[in-house]
Image 1 (spheres, rainbow, N blue to C red):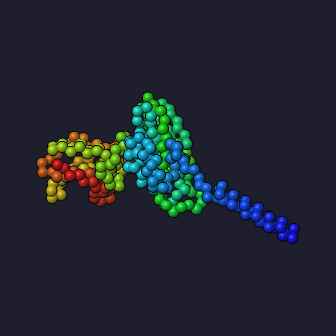
Image 2: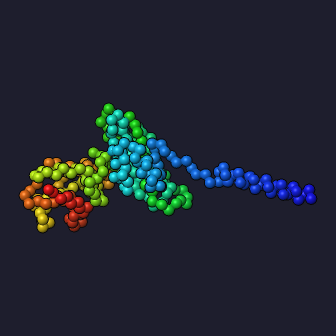
Image 3: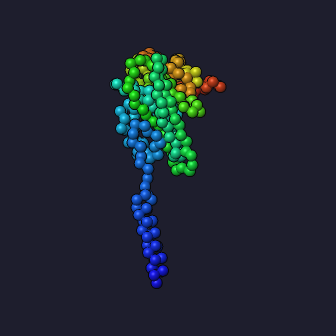
Length: 262
């Protein structure tokens, strides 16, 4: 009898231990990182909340460029925001962080660390990104983002940054602001185009080109370059302004954006 009592007591002890472990740690989840160094974001609501915690200009930048692998620098007041998007990923487990920032006489060099999943992960769409905030430099330095492991070229937005939500957009041309008058038009945006050549035309109601011209953005693909169609005269009988690139293969229009004119 004593033997059976001892075995029964041992069983109760083991059950008690298992129950305690389950309550204390069995269902625990890692604490989410809510610092300025945002890495992997897998929940839509959490991603949007994090972005809204930043100044509106940074939130707009992140929303505008979320699907793209791209970096940029935004100066606001006394601070500089360094941003890196890693684009759309088909699973969780990806993260990006800024590991090092070095400023010299000519440029700010930003070292970026990319981490891919090491094992099984959730099959969800994720958009890993990071934002670092530093004191704004008095120097007019350019910024160079580089992969500290030397595996990735990091495209960046060169020139004015997309801190306003896009008014119109195609895959490689984005319109940030369009000022449309009765006889003048000014349009600004960014473009990711070979040799940085942005074409535009004024068209009549039949779709015929009345006048066509081009300009050079501040950088060509794979970077995004800022462009400005500045205070251009609108020809008579024009109803649309079209902005596009031309195929190097056959000259056809690509990434067309059409803007109705008053």
